[in-house]
Amino acid sequence: MKFASLFDASRRNSRVRKVLIGGAAATLLGIGALAAHAQPGGMMGGMGGLGGHMGGHCGPGFAGDPAQMGERMLGRIDHMLTRVGASDDQKTRIKAIAKSAMTDLAPLRTQRADLHKQMHDALAAPVLDKAKLADLHAQQSQLMEKTSARMHEAMIAAAEILTPEQRKAMAERMGRRGMRGMAPQG
Image 1 (cartoon, rainbow, N blue to C red):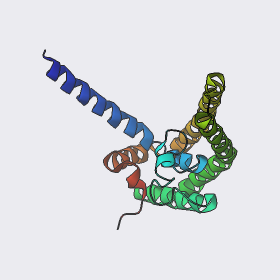
Image 2: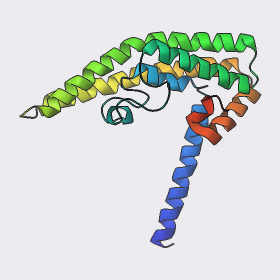
Image 3: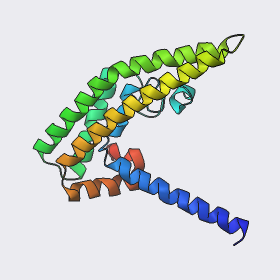
Image 4: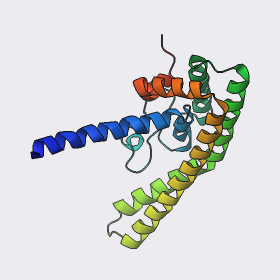
């Protein structure tokens, strides 16, 4: 097989992985986007994230007042749940999970912002303190792991409330639209 063919096959496999990851993300019921509420600067904020490089603006509802972000996110979750035929009881239960996750993630958002500032200051120092940078990186990694674990917990709890058919419909919708699938469509 030629190098170009190997390269093309590798790119196709990468796309397949992305689609599978997107399908898994769909089971987050949009709750995965709550990470936006937990991170400074928007959905992908923080050191090296797009939010940090784009002024914290990763689309409507992902920057600004945390209370407004939370309300927008709950509205998007409600919209997505409506699109997959969730009952009022399912919506209420899933939104309670989302609110709980947002509450739990709020302190992590503050910690992440502090670590981001410390990392920024350390990188801007006249002399790089590699040990300090390594420690800050380790702290950031631990914080991301805590955030990820809480998001995973919320994802599973919410997914258990939906029927298999509803989860499949959500995965298909999210697969077609990505996170945009959460926003109301005109």
